[in-house]
Length: 340
Ligand code: SF4
Ligand code: SF4
Image 1 (tube, rainbow, N blue to C red):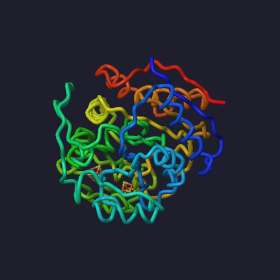
Image 2 (cartoon, protein in one colour; image 1 turned 180 degrees about the horizontal axis):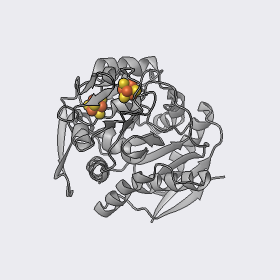
Image 3 (tube, rainbow, N blue to C red; image 1 turned 90 degrees about the vertical axis):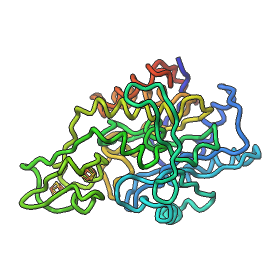
Image 4 (cartoon, rainbow, N blue to C red; image 1 turned 90 degrees about the horizontal axis):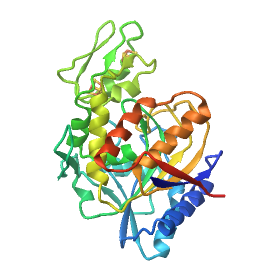
């Protein structure tokens, strides 16, 4: 059983979110007796160019000021993405982060210029016996993992677990997680716009009268799924193996660390903040959460989301929680502590 702390919020106002996150951080440190390191990177997501739902830098300011008031040195840490975009290389990634307002702290791109900086961590997995993480994470044993909780094309949802699994993985680790996922184009729905061809960094999509994905070349990065304006690219949900892979990467990144997790269950979209455009919101705002357990905090979010919306939402993501719990990363049993 793990504790998850919660502040309900209906509005996604940056200053209010910042204050809520800071208060939750203080509660977790005090009540869970978390010993803080002298340097703590904040694991963030800078948002793809054009995305309008990623967590803005203002949301982090409260936590940053609480760290500084304790004499702790903060930084932002992130990895390059697998697909072609503004965050594919270190230089372009940092440039976009600065453009998005992340100007107040040093930025560590943990997997180097092009995803080549890798550290391999052994794990007792069913799929993997080791995971490939960004080498820049290795010097630290504590992170504050800030996650915008929303949908994700393959994972079901993206929260703390996905920040660990995909967010800590070097490019080769991201490919290893995606490798069994094979998106296909619905020939009836495709309008032959070509957006998917543009989005694919691997030359895996051919466009004639409709689009066609060559699975010999496809690495399953899902950039095309997010790029398709009519939802014609479907993911093969034989992806049970994908959620296991994700859980094992989360374990490799998070097990044994003194991490603090903060989930922002607001501005919930169907797909993740790697999508470079506007997406409609699919659920009402719920609030901000904190815990030392990445499994429990994500489980609370998915449970509350379904309870409030009155229907299953991103339900396949539960598989990764079960797998991570089985490995010992955390617990799906939780006590939700609402702060007044
Ligand atoms: S076809 Fe495969 S490699 Fe290309 S964008 Fe789609 S998922 Fe990624
Ligand atoms: S983005 Fe979608 S609609 Fe456009 S060509 Fe690709 S599959 Fe067809």
